Length: 490
Image (tube, rainbow, N blue to C red; front, side, top):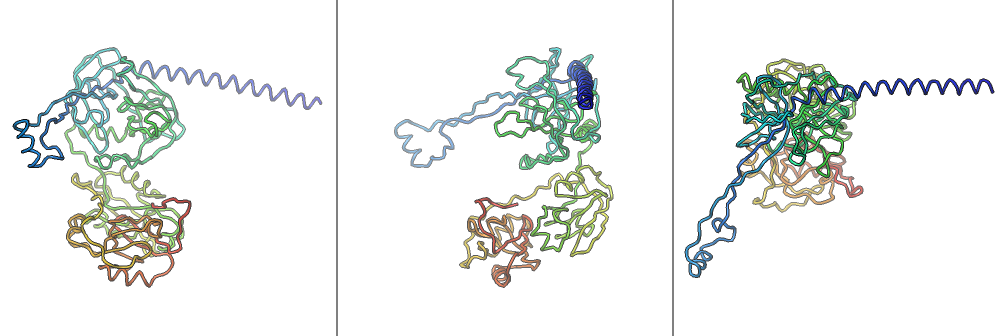
């Protein structure tokens, strides 16, 4: 009994000790939050961007207009009135932060894009007109400039040193037009993940890769504001939220400040902003594709399914079908890893790329190039005019020969293969991920140049078949059936 009492007493003392220790830590942490709010928050500004939009109204260019309508209108009402234009001004609200006492401000490009007038309000109530010094749409970073005296500024941190679980503070002016107060709002959370890539914004020319993910609340108006560590140093620019409702759901994203600093330095230095580039299209691996390529390591690496002509990858001898395992001595688990690693390299830097080709491990040296400013990935569109050939479908797809329109659409006069003209719902091809309009140029690593060749080769094959398209490699399994009604496209 004495032993039990002693044990319980010792446990009680330990609980008291931990409780007192935790209380002290919490108090110190609270002081850090207050320090950041009072000190660093003074350099966080509200960015009010105004743009002029033109709206047309009247009868001109209406979709139902035709000569008969014009004559009818003229007989009863006189000449058709001219279409008129009216302008209206739209205001957008975001955040930013001063990084130099001379008045340079960092914010998001999407906060000030196409703005006619920009006004910046400091927490102390001072207002200044702002000039756009430079914008980089791809990284979503913009640099503004104001003319003022005794301007506060924030210190830059090192985003490369961030760790998952580290405390961070998001500062900005969310819903500032409702609150009508220039004082910034702080929200607190942790770095919930690093090196996140999002498939949003690409059609607008933006690339959101290697982002910091945080559960610190980010809402509308927070865009462009700083993400700070407990020292009050900037480690990121708050940029995006993931939400099903439009409001905060605990998943926000920030641009690493180290990348934003490089953009900033190039802009104020009058230099061209360049991005490292290999010129390859890549896709993830899975069990079926691994089996087709004879790979033993399941799911690790990135499969190259297309290479840009004249790119650094082509010049180095990298080929379609190569699986990238490492680049610059860093392991590649998936395509996002490769994209994030390449984005952190320097143009002109020579790196080793470790690949698997036909079961053989190779090491190739590649000199990183600069992504061409005019480089645009052609978006695949559905072919509407070409008539399908009268052929039986193979595993749910019908194909046809390439037309001149296809060559124009795909921007390649020498392209060879066949075009997928239709895909039957819930067929093996449908579940593989292949879609109408895709270009197929290989079946089980054998080139096909016509619909006749395609059907001749494909009809003799059994089991799981590897098909190469302009959208990547796909495995079509003849035994594949509908599973819970889900589309298993990649």
